[in-house]
Amino acid sequence: MPKQVDHDERRRQIGDAVCRVIAARGLDAVSLRHVAAEADVSMGRVQHYFATKDEMLMFAFELISERVAARLGAVHSDDPRTYLRAILFELLPLSPAARVEAPVLAAFLAQAVVEPRLGEPLRQGNGEMVAWLAGMISAVRPGGDPERDAMGLLAFVDGLMLQVLIGQVSSSAAEELVDHQLGLVLTR
Amino acid sequence: MPKQVDHDERRRQIGDAVCRVIAARGLDAVSLRHVAAEADVSMGRVQHYFATKDEMLMFAFELISERVAARLGAVHSDDPRTYLRAILFELLPLSPAARVEAPVLAAFLAQAVVEPRLGEPLRQGNGEMVAWLAGMISAVRPGGDPERDAMGLLAFVDGLMLQVLIGQVSSSAAEELVDHQLGLVLTR
DNA sequence: CGTATTGCAATGCGAACGCATCGTAAAACG
DNA sequence: CGTTTTACGATGCGTTCGCATTGCAATACG
Image (cartoon, rainbow over all chains, first blue to last red; front, side):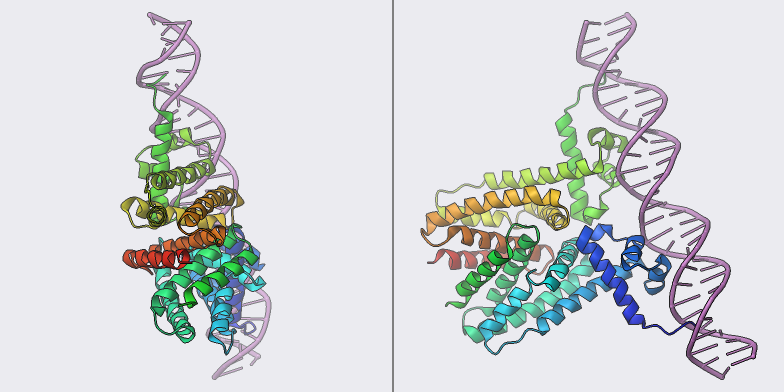
C-alpha cells in the first residue's frame, strides 16, 4: 500500500474546500471539479474520499456544525447574563471565524427549506440551543416563559445573522441590537 | 404576425413557474427545461421571453417581491398597533399565499449573501420596511429609538420565517412569539 | 391580398456535470 | 521478498446544462 494517510484529516481538508466554495459562490457552485480545484487536489482524490457529491455535502454540513459547536463550547462565563450575551454574539458573523462559517450556515439553512434531510439535524441543533438558552434565561430572570423567550431570541439572532450577511446591518449595529433585545427579554 | 399576445402576462406565467420550482426544489433546481415543464410550455417559449436564465431569475425575484409588497399593501388598519401586528404576520408563512412565497424569498435571501446584485434591491426593500415599521412604532410608543426597534423587529420576523419554514416553529407558536415580541418592544 | 413580422417549436452545440472504470506507484505485511 | 492492498490520477461515459440557430405557421398591416 502507499503511505498510510490520515483519512479523517484528508476528508476534513476536502470538506474545508467545500465550505470555502459555498461561502464564496453559494451551494449550487459546489461541483466535484470546483472543490478539487479549491482544495488543490485531483478530482480522483475527492472521489476517493467521498462516494457521492451528496455525501460530500453532508460531511461539509456536519463539519461546519461541529465548528460552530466548538466555538460555542469555547465560550465561558460565570455570570449567566454575560454567558448568554457571549453565546448570542458568537452566533453572529462578528469574528473572522464566524464570518467564514456564517455564509455556509445560511446556505444550508436555505437548502433545509426544501431538503428534509438537512432540516432534521438543523432542528435538533436548534432544539438543544433553545433548551440551553432557556436555562440561561431562567438563571438570569426566573419565572416567565423561558422556553418561548429562548425561541424568540434564537429567531432574532438567526434573522440578524442574515441581515448582517447581506450588508443590511453593520456588525456594531448588530451588537447593539442584541444588547437591546437582551435588555427587553431579561427585564421582567 | 401570429396573434398578438400579452407579453407581460406570458412573462408572468413563466416567472410563476420559476417560483414554483424554487419553492419545491430550491434555486439550483431552476433550469430552462424544468421551468418550461413546470409552466407546461416549450423551452423555446421560455427563451423567447427571457434572453438569459439570469434575466429570468431576476424577473422571478421582482415578481415575488411585488407580490409580497401587494400583500402588505392590502393590509389596512386604523389602529397603528393592529396595523403593525398584521404586517408582521403577513411577513410570516401563515396564509396560503405567504406559504408559497416565503420559501422563494428564503432562497433569494440566501443567494443574496453571495450575489451582490440580489443584495442591493433586498437592502432597499428592507430599508423601506424599517422606515415604515419605525413610523408605526413611533405612533404606538413615541420616543425611544424607533429605527433600532424596527430593525430588531424585522430581523426577528425574518428569522422566525426561516424557523417556521424548516419546521422548527409552528404557525401558532410563531404568532404567539410575534405578539410577545410586540409586547416587549411597544411597552416602554 | 400579398407580405413582412411576430411567436414560437425544434434542433444542435459545446461545456460542465456526477460518476464509473481502469491503471499504477508505492508501501505495509506475511 | 513477494504479494497484496491502498491511494490515488487519468480517462471516458451518458446526461444535462445554457444558449444559438433555424424554420415555419400565423396574422396584423399596407
